[in-house]
Image (cartoon, rainbow, N blue to C red; front, side):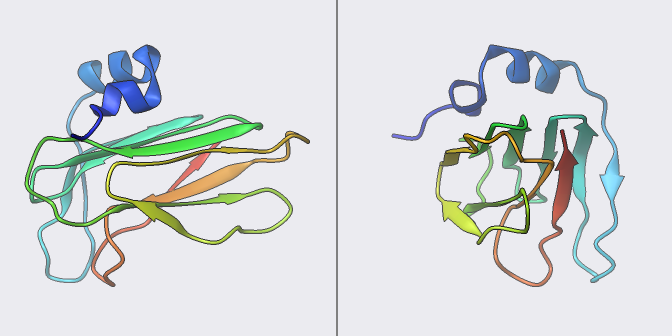
Length: 126
């Protein structure tokens, strides 16, 4: 059974998800764009056209990304973190992380909802 995205990212992130407006991002590929795109310092979320919401939370010491149990997307949540350089892409069908930086060097991270070329990559900053 999948964890709800709120459990993966915490109550504060869930509160932000529930209060955000709707925007869209054009992928430029002819595929339908993501909706509900919202990014701010340390947090971001979007919903793929198949109805699944993905979210990421980032501090200088920790990053975690999750895939909601809403919608019908088969794609995993994908995340990579930048400290001194970009780390490798990690993926899971429910949650990636937490990934920790004991030295507190994380400054940005990226999230995407699948590993296909048409899936948009989003960047969140601390």
